[in-house]
Length: 209
Ligand code: B1M
Image (tube, rainbow, N blue to C red; front, side, top):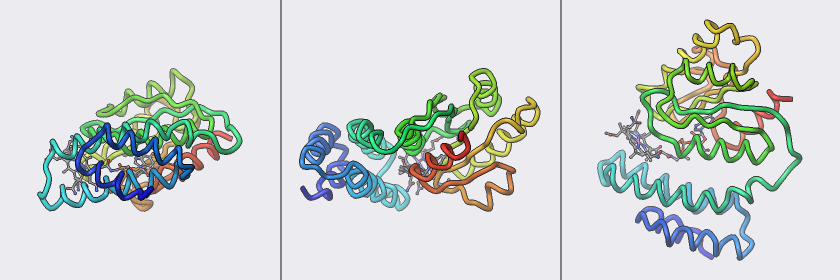
């Protein structure tokens, strides 16, 4: 199958067709990672570019996001199959003021695929909530996602909240999302920046070991 068809249908927001095509690609034996990257993420990337240039608007992006999630859900068990299972507990959330959750959901998916237990706090999460959850649930790692330049600064508050709660030495703080960089990670005093979901999962396993 031509994975570009998945990308095109995602861009058109045709969630049911995307779901059918993803299933078809799976049935044809195409690796889940390839379907994710060349079908779903490729389509989302085109939508992102159009959104930036005002060629599409929030409603179109939302239906594309829905199609992305429906396709990704089918891939989840397959992405989870490979490799030795690790143990550890991670809490993850998109920071306060930010509603983007597609990347976070992929990170969660990859982490679960590695055998980690993931407490998902959703989007628009206050630093105190993330830290309190990590404390109460005994998470070794906190993962913060931010997609906006106006919200990435909240990650610094997460680090400060962990210090204030006295858990900074016992928890690793990971940051990610499109505007986040390694330099930013160091600037806010977090422990690791990873550019994508797969490397985030690998790093979390390393931290939990
Ligand atoms: Co928004 N949006 N959006 N949006 N949106 C961006 C981010 C933007 C870059 C678009 C643009 O202008 N080009 C821009 C931000 C500009 C900036 O800050 N510099 C933007 C804007 C401006 C906005 C609004 C303000 C628009 C408005 O209302 N005027 C608004 C803000 C709402 C809010 O959050 N308060 C808004 C709203 C929305 C929608 C609701 C319509 C929708 C979100 C739907 C949803 O998530 N459920 C949406 C979307 C979909 C996007 C784009 C098009 C796509 C984002 C995405 O899902 N990418 C985006 C443009 C773009 O990125 N090209 C855009 C796919 C996803 C898999 O990638 O999230 O980067 P990403 O995740 C990657 C890595 O970054 C990494 O792993 C993932 C997979 O490998 N990663 C992590 C992510 N989190 C991690 C955490 C980790 C580790 C790795 O933890 C350790």
